[in-house]
Every structure is written in C-alpha cells, then in structure tokens.
Image (cartoon, rainbow, N blue to C red; front, side, top):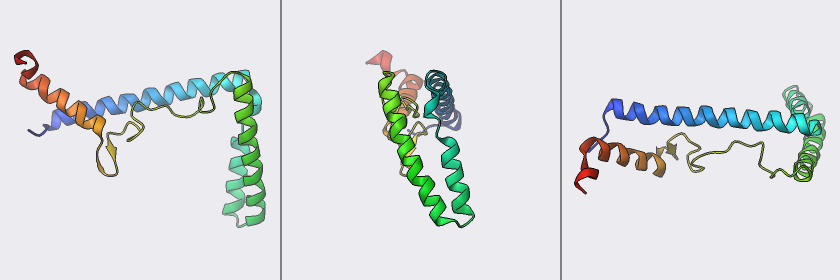
Amino acid sequence: MALSNSQFDAIMRVYNQRQFLNKRRQDERIREVYERIPQVEIAAAMAQAARRKLLGDEDGARAFKEEASLLKEQKRKYLQRAGYPDDYMEMQYHCPCCRDTGFADGKKCRCFRQMEIQVLYDQSNIREVL
C-alpha cells in the first residue's frame, strides 16, 4: 500500500523539523565553542582562499588552503583540550545515511521506509489487531 500525498507530506514535515533542529543545535554548539575558545575560528582563512582561487591566484589559494589545514588541526587540538569531541561543531544527524532528508542515492532511505511503515500501520489499525 502506497502513501497518500498527505501522509508523504507529514513524513517530510518530520524531516524538515529534524533538519531545522539539527541546524539550531549545531549553531548553539558553535556559539558555545567560540565563546569558550575563540581561537577555533577559521572561516576567514577559508573564505580568503576561495576568493584567491576565484581570482585565479592558484599559488595564493594553495598557501591559504595549507594554512586552513593547519588551522583545522589547531582547532581539533583546542577542542580536545577543552574536553569537546573532534566533531562537536559538525552537524549531527538522526540518520547519517540520508542526513535527515529521507532519501539516499536517489532512493527512499531505510529511516523513511520505517516511518512509512509506522504511518501505514497506524492508519490501518493493525497494531491493535496484533
């Protein structure tokens, strides 16, 4: 039995809400780290490297890329010293396969299929019978 449009929309709203909450939590973690360890800011170096590359300065872009790599390593060390895991500032997903989109490799993810089964079971009252 396939999902109706309203059921599909309801599942997609769950994914949208997850994505929103994931981003909000990531922003909170980043803000927390920047307040405690301001040295981990590397965005400026990365942006400058991108600008140089766009302007055709390959050597300058390469130099800034190397610098950014060193800054990332420093960031990792600062995070560890402060007691944070290496990936503390990264996005955290409920489902790493689809990254909370419901789809992986152009197909429905296993978490989407699980939600789909749940919705269909709830709709058909099979749970009560079982």
